[in-house]
Length: 301
Image (cartoon, rainbow, N blue to C red):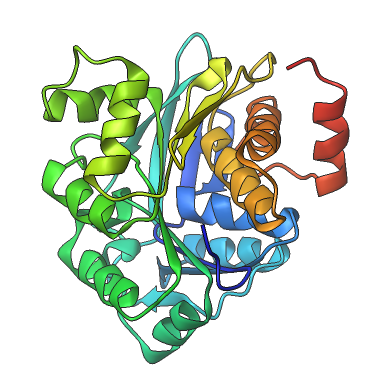
């Protein structure tokens, strides 16, 4: 898998997760960008906020996290996004996503296209593509870039349209999704009778993906690359909430691959990052890369 350079462009939603404990900055692409920055990867975040106090606070948070806000657009009419987060008895999160919001209206600009052409990897999710404007902007960005494309499948009802997911899968070189989303895709294609590995292998072949990575919550993760499967059992931790765990996992995976690590090693750091974030409140807790290394070196996986 050839990566032209180690610059990343993350594209999609930025928002406030309205947790029972209070509001926390969130949005899968933004979470991934922040974790990548913590792990030493050069990353830009492209999104859109409202011209309101919530938007300014989110922009301030991005700057304090070390990210550039040059690709954060401001909408004069639509508000900054807020998502109601509900936690079950095991602290697993479900989401209530309001619309329309500013990231539904991300505009194509020359500056955005320039960053895309300079990137070695573009990371995008499926949630922000619920609106045609943002979806068309991303498609135009992807068409104008030779970077590797990574789609993070985020199936949030009712924004889980099969045709949109299919379009973005066909653009992707790498696919990341969780075990529940594997089941949904299997239902779409009448493959529920197949085992997980067969479905993953089919997905890679059907959509021409170089790598498919599936997170399994507290059961770790599995990756499929160049005809081989790689498993990691995960790290057993006491979860505070699972918000952002998958995003931290993805950032750990990307950072490891950028360092030239093999899939097995990359899964180790990725699972450690996801487990660590699950022990913290919110999607982007404070830590440094060395803290994460110490964490997984001293945790039984």
